[in-house]
Each structure stands twice: as structure tokens, then as C-alpha cells.
Amino acid sequence: MSIYDIIFYLFATITLVSAFFVVTIRNIVYSAFFLLFTFFGVAGIYVILGADFVAMVQLIVYVGGILILILFGVMLTNKITNVQIKSGTSQVIPAAIGVGLFAGILTAALINTPWRKIDTSPLLPTTQGLGLMLISEYGVVFELLGILLLIALIGAASLARK
Amino acid sequence: MIHIGLGHFLFISSILFSLGIFGIVTRKNAVMVLMGIELMLNASNINFIAFAKYGNFGLQGQIMALFVIVLAAAEAAIALAIVLNIYKTFSTVNVDEIDKLKD
Image (cartoon, rainbow over all chains, first blue to last red; front, side, top):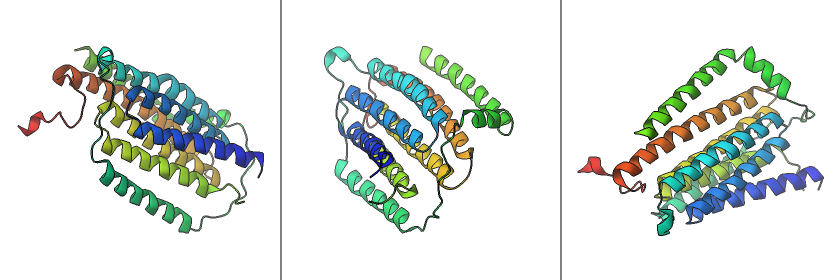
């Protein structure tokens, strides 16, 4: 077992276990903090897959932005003083059966599919290539995403201000 | 010991996707539903990057993952603004109690 395998299993365990706690723990604030560990684990998996820039963007945007937004959402929509911060659940057993079937079908499909064996290319820095693609091949999409983010910012501010 | 390959990453993403669906279906709090959606988006991102590495697609899969992250940020901002408005109107964020259109 090489060091690569050990690191992979470490990050996979962090991701899956904390994701399981996110959807099962009753306290929403604890769920949000377990979501932090899930995002860290996913960033580690990106690094293992050789996507260093995407991993850093994942850390900055998800952990630094989206998770803080979610925590603000939790704090603004619950009366913290009233210990009313639990989240109820509904129909856990049928959902568990259905989701278990779904996961089983997905896993069986990916085990039975003959994936092509490709000797993996060496891990290289991707930042320069991504930057060049974003201003040449995907330039229009890049600008459209900028406009979309501006629209989302203005829309969210005006929605929440009323 | 099996060498780490494409199947391992696809297995992680399928389990993460299923857990996201489980969170969306079972939780009553709207913020928890949002967390389930974030889990599913992360699972799809793992798929994009795994196929980009093992399928010889160059950097295009990573570009798509970046776009997904941008859309997730926009979606989280808008959805939390809507959740705040729902809380101001109904003083609850439990999605099964917000059924005013049914009456």
C-alpha cells in the first residue's frame, strides 16, 4: 500500500463520514461544521486527482464563502436563545430504503462497467492552463458567469433587504 | 490491494450524491435542504474531475468544475435570501409547514 493509497483512503473516510453526520445529526450548527470537514475532504480528493487550482478555489469559495453564508442563514432563521436550533426529520425509513437502493444501483453500474485502463499522466500544475482556457476558449462563458454573479448579488441583496 | 482507479472516485461521488438526496428528502429545515444540495454539487464536481483525469480530457473537466462552483455560490446566496424572506413571512423555515397555497 503506497502513500498515495493511504492519503486517498484518509480523505475518502473524512468526506464520507462527515457527510453522513451532516445528514443525520439533529443540531443544524453541528451539521454546518461537519459540512466544513466534507468540503475539506473533497478538496483533498481534488488534490489527489491533480486539480490543485480547483482544490484551492473549493477551499476559498466553499469554506470561506458558502459555509459562512449557511451559518448566517442558520443564525438568522432560528431563535438561538430558545434552543430551537434542531431540525426535524420526516419519513426517514422510506427515504433510507430508496436512497440505499439508488446508491446500490449506482455502485453496481460502476463496478460492472469496463472502464478503459489509462496510465495516468504525471501531475502537473494546472493554473496556467486553466487561466489560458478561461480567457481564450471559454472567454464568453467566463464573462457570462461574471454577469450572472453580479445579478445574483443584486438579487439576493434586494430580496433579503425587504 | 487494488490500485486506486476511476472506480474509487466514482464510488465516493455516488455515495456523496445519495447522502445529499437523503438530506434533501428527510430534513424539514430549509437550510438543511440547501446543505444537501451542496453535497450533491460536490459529488458532481468529483465526477467531472475524475473523468477529466482518467478520460484524457485535458483541463476541460476542471473548467466545468469551476463553473459549477461559481453557480453553487450564486445559488446559495439567492436561496438564503429566499429563506430569510420565508422566515419573515411565516416565522418558520420548516418546509412542510409552508403550505399556504394549499388552503
